[in-house]
Image 1 (spheres, rainbow, N blue to C red):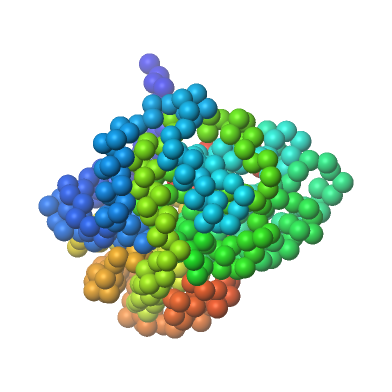
Image 2 (image 1 turned 135 degrees about the horizontal axis):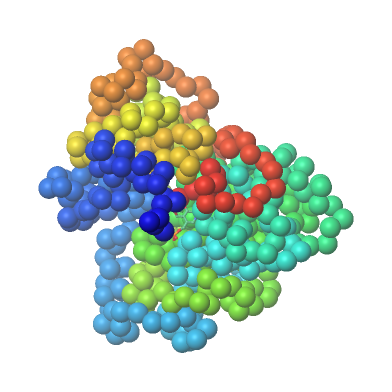
Length: 447
Ligand SMILES: Cc1ncc(COP(=O)(O)O)c(C=O)c1O
């Protein structure tokens, strides 16, 4: 008799093959979390190089104590949506603090960053509207397209010319046009050429939403992200973000300067039909958010660390993403070698993310690291050394391609990236450009 799981047979086969070569990412279980950068894994002290913990805030004393206090005084959860159960003081306070932080009129809190994109985008782009999304968008953006009644149009990754062509075709149509981009793309760490997109959105009277998931706390003098770094905050209509990365907890948000944002609460299903963030999470997020603007030294350390890892791996001869960023991805084309490298690193006590197609651009196999300000120079040096040794053993790099100066990559010091003194070079990845109805196996849907 057939089973409801039969349709997953090809995926199951792929998973079995992956596990046969070593471990599977879903089976990893940390026995102990020692610090933001170290954990015990299979009895081994392991350096965490893939946690998105950009500022190392997960053990921040103020955040931990605030969460404990909130647990004791307000309990473990809200047990319902704010529309049904009402808001706690912390929800409102955090929304006000987010609005002040971004210098925007208002903010709406969501339970995760995924839900912020899902809820904001699907609500903002309705029937008769147009949703223009980058081909390399995160899965939450693709899923928002499925939930939205708008017509979805995909433009080439980081390609303003391609976007303009699509917008031109819509001239004379009456619906609102919402362009959605990400500041730092989560697989390769490349950044959107934001100023060019802002020019286009202004020219065509479109709205622009940017997901600053990987840039909050990471970019800009005050840590407000790419919009701050590029000096275009006044031209951005909507910002979404997450607390699951630099803020060190969980939750998401939408901020905007446009009047009337509040109505989104009543049309956004991922806001209305799910439990609101628990008080402990809200309390720790508030503590961390309050530190972001002043965390200049952490940001500098983060970018210095990113530069150390990127240049070290590049000089070893690995193929990387196009630009130095806190996301450093080794690009590989051979699945067995990618899995071999990932397992070899784990055996040596270095944890990275293994990202496989279809969640990766061009069907690459990626070993993705997300660096933290909490990493020490020694931890990063060790990771580079181990990676290089295993890369050589697997024949991924040879002595001849080591220490090659890759002229195409942006070298330089991390502070220059942080403050925008270096230009971001657009990285062409996915080439697809048709109007789409996204599907689950969409090669551009990112995890
Ligand atoms: C670009 C981007 N947006 C949104 C999210 C979702 O964030 P959260 O973990 O808060 O659901 C992620 C997380 O992976 C992401 O990388």
